[in-house]
Length: 422
Image 1 (cartoon, rainbow, N blue to C red):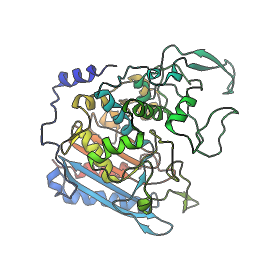
Image 2: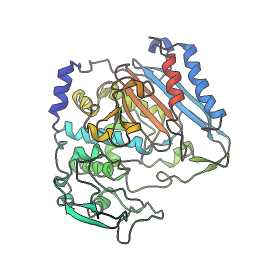
Image 3: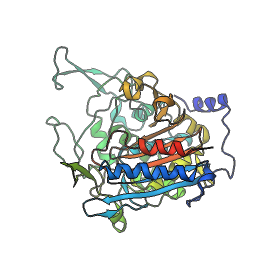
Image 4: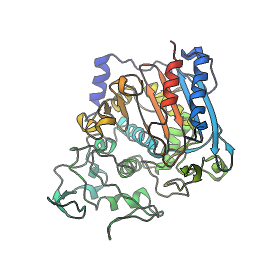
């Protein structure tokens, strides 16, 4: 899908480009009324989160809301470490897991803006190993996943397929853990890099024909996408992200590998076991990683991710630092897969669209009250952020649990919406 489609969409709906100066934001508390909230209503937000903590549902959280480029709420509540009784702090560093994905998507789209990548490019243009892929088709009458027939892919994987979970790339475990992969099946190793791993991934058969299905790719698709960024930018992924995204936006606590001096701020991953809190092993971020996981490797703070989403809310710029063109943000935040996402998990996704690595609200009555067109994505350990263009609002709710309750941010969201008065 060419970039011109996004520009045409913006023109069709008359969406203006961000005017110079309108993207100004300072990270300091503003009066609730500056964002159209009531002070008493925001106390309801505090109470809603505290209720979850008191009930033992979560151990602690950091949450924030900004509207009209004003920070109207940012609080740390409960405990970062419920075992050692260490309080949560506002600058706590969280494992972002899949919240990383839309950051990787922005990196790719920056290369689209520069004309180095097109969304409809076959990825074999950059990584030749993906040129002639095979698709694994189950043998009729068996449920044995090893019983498959390999058939040629009907078309190549495109860049857009990577960002919309429609590539067919398989989910591959590893990272030094035990895995059920069959003998000879390549696995991630702690010594792998994007450059060494991605060609190995290309030796595996696809799970379905590219573009025919939506099936969530935990690490592989966005890892491949980030490898494309390395190739066309000529920079290692960590360097590109720091120099081109994090530093310009003032995201000073966002890393794939957290420096030693800041590691004491990483929130330990915990789980609820027999009614008690216990430490849990994190898949990523537990040690230095040479593989820069574009699908789940970032660690960050609420402040930093709010800055990133404020950039998206302001259609690609923040405080005079333009990251994406306005029409590219429009392209990112509109539906790209139609019925494919709705058919994935119909009770959950049937009322939503899916853009370039973000879920998009189509029916507010079935989306916890988020407004039509709101978009975002979350992480497996409970990091949730979203952008609401209709309300000129961004919000974040971060916890760090090995198995967070489904939609754990709902009490926060519900209270926040009740606090909104103008």
